Image (cartoon, rainbow, N blue to C red; front, side, top):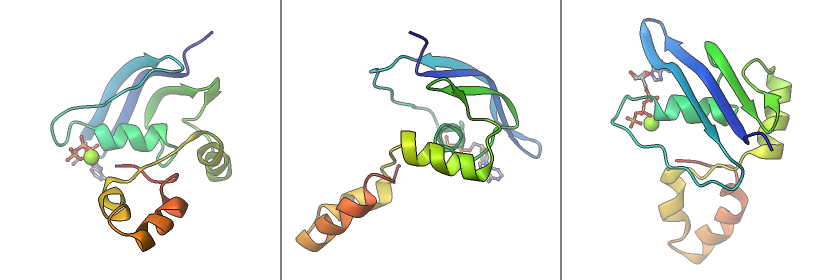
Length: 114
Ligand SMILES: Nc1ncnc2c1ncn2[C@@H]1O[C@H](COP(=O)(O)OP(=O)(O)OP(=O)(O)O)[C@@H](O)[C@H]1O
Ligand SMILES: [Mg+2]
């Protein structure tokens, strides 16, 4: 079986800044991954692209057999809906602190990341 995620020579530039400079890696189905690095090393830039929230400026990103780097907004919306779950760190700590928020969290958790 091919890897679930195949990233090759991925680039993300913001003007002169190279947030991602030809990054390549693969993730197999069932693998658990943590992305670690100092502030400004490109973690959010990478996750935004893998999550279908932003476009790369170069390279290739294949997720579950689909090249997502050049999808249009409508296709990206479908991709996010079908394949991606986000847990935003700024909501997660408060979301379990009381009953009302816990109920709210049921609606927001699957779409957030941190
Ligand atoms: N929208 C943007 N416009 C311009 N530059 C950006 C933008 N987003 C990120 N950058 C720059 O790209 C580089 C990588 O930023 P990124 O936010 O991906 O890093 P990070 O690893 O998530 O950092 P942190 O740990 O602080 O969250 C940094 O130099 C940052 O200033
Ligand atoms: Mg970040």
